[in-house]
Amino acid sequence: MNILTTLVPYWVSILFLILLPIPIFMITNLVKEALANSNIESKKIDSIYKSILVFYLVYLGYASILSWNGVFSENSLPPRVILFTTFPFALFLILVVSRLEIYKVFLQNVKLESLVKVHIFRFIGVFFLILYYFVAIPKSFALIAGLGDIAIAVLSIFVSKILILKKSYSKQITIIWNILGILDIISVLTSAIITTKLSIETGSQSVIALTYFPFCLIPAFAAATIIFLHITIFRKLFT
Image 1 (tube, rainbow, N blue to C red):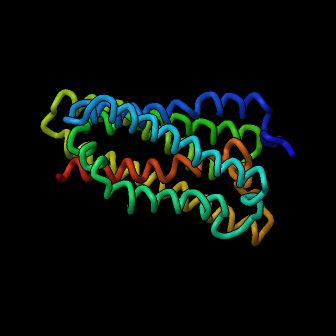
Image 2 (cartoon, rainbow, N blue to C red):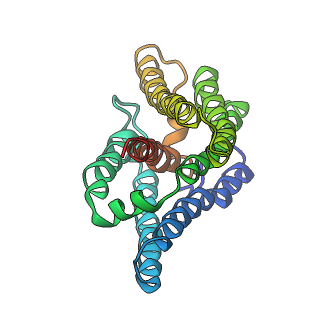
């Protein structure tokens, strides 16, 4: 059994694994900084911080094991990697995490500009373009997923700056950017499903590369996390 996919050179997979912790630490540090502005004791904040890191470690370990055992590798609708990771993780975040008291404290104390700026981690979408370069995924999917994520990441820098400067139009700009961010991630998921459907029906190239380790961690981690962050931004804007 190959631990790393052979669809691309090993250095691509290793580089991805080196960079993957960055968005995880960005999100956990965002939580830590927000809670530091509350009345919660520092020891409890450190405990929450570590708990989030452990959760991600366990969850991504779960996704990795499923991938290594070939659970995701069948070309099916919906793609199994989405069925076993993206959907349940999104439901967990929306139905469980959002109802926790600690989330409410976080929402109250986090800065809106920080919630927007954390989307810089979506530069990791460049790996969709790298996978296409090595003919591991179709061009149409790579462009939708890769360029969309990169565009939202770039725009997050400018939108967060507008919020910091407290421009009169900052709320409107943030709403527009947030809607675009949600549409981007929905288009990626939709494109993945459509590409898989076409692959099953016509034998065309699929996005099967995203079911192999380590790239299975993109749909496992990124999609649900991004959707939940956008929902959190809307809640911050209108509460």
